[in-house]
Length: 278
Image (cartoon, rainbow, N blue to C red; front, side, top):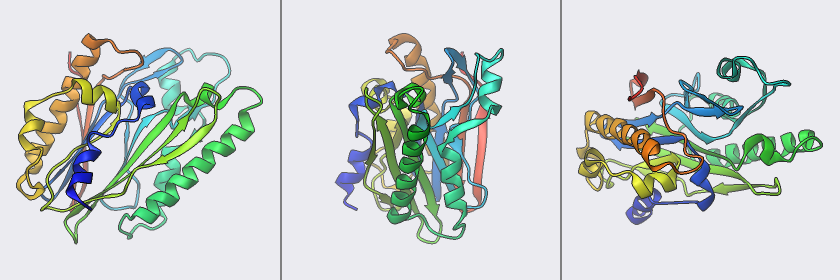
């Protein structure tokens, strides 16, 4: 893939994605990559923190699923007494992250490919359409999942020392009609210049977030960026995103809670939770 396209990925903005409060950033590095995510969601008008947005398949090596927006619908009748606890354990009417994880685990030894990501994207879209058909007599689709969701599947191919990124989204318009959107599949080798990938509040991030740590590594050959520097840059990016979300006050931007940082290398996946920034 041409480097110009790789660099453009960090700047891609869908106008409708401004309502994705989630903020996740993926940073490639020498020997793997780092993904950092806030853990805040809003459920039944309640702010809930500590929700994992970095999903780790059970069997697929060195691969994580990053989800922004509403890709999971929890069934409930009357408003739960403890909304956040119920949101984490209540019965799922729609669960796209689990669907994706099962698909990835079905071929545990495979290297992520564009064809596989496209197939997973299509299956996810079909699941949304089936959900809509079953439930539309009560409410249109946007009642359940708002404007939709975005998914990044990020994997490290240890044999080729390459970071692989598949990105798709399901948009729901004001009439409740879903649409599948795919971005080009990305392969980042150690000789490519570093560009980071934002999942969720892309427009907010592009407009407001500027960190010295990220600026120091963007544009360098990936092979010259250590996992330590990538981790520091990813963590600071989310920290600043949380602070700015409090001061800028853009509608539907809810970024906060503890921060999860996943480090993915040939040795596997390590996820560490950092305390909420006050």
